Length: 284
Image (cartoon, rainbow, N blue to C red):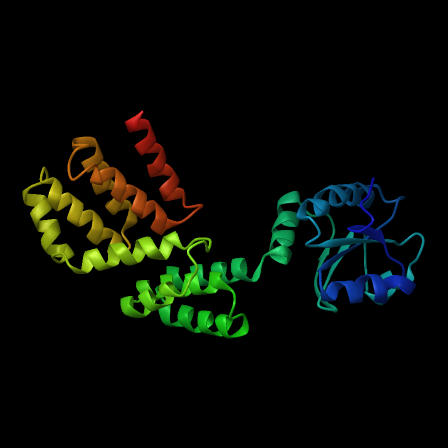
């Protein structure tokens, strides 16, 4: 049975109230369909299952063009099925024809993403290109708009560390509540960055490692240094080698260093998942 709060029929007379007004708080996916058009009818069933999974973060309005063609004409619908996305009282997107489930999920994920999720995706692009100044500009603007959003401050601290502004990052971290999600990432990054700054240069450590590959202290310092340079796989390789060589070396520092790097990489990291699996398999 359709959840009437999330899935509802729309006609031209109800469009303003049920779609435009409601879209000012929750995006509305408007589907134009007809029972006589089998592909669009099947597509409607798919959306009626998919949309409620987003738990009210998006609504589904159904326009049966066989019953009312006025709205389809008004929004220039050319064929079935046809989708219109209304958000903030405005038409923001449209899709014509059948869509794959993956395409629908991508669209709905984007519509229902929180401001923190959207910002995190935008930052990832800047960080991948090493454009930390642009990332900081975006973050400062976001914090101005939402000063109580601690997620933005977590990201600000993280980018400050990447940019080498450790003192500023430390001050930002000092004002973030301990229970804030993802806080362990910049905390671990700052700890490793400060330790890395106290060590020999990465070039010197690489030379020492080439001359003495069995020296676990050199491998540990190189692991920290490589992490500071963003060479996470090399960093994890060194830490894993220490773990395999001697669990007692500096109180199992190979394992604990891997855990710190996992924190820096954050949740969802494929690299962290791969090395976590290696670590687990070795230890068990």
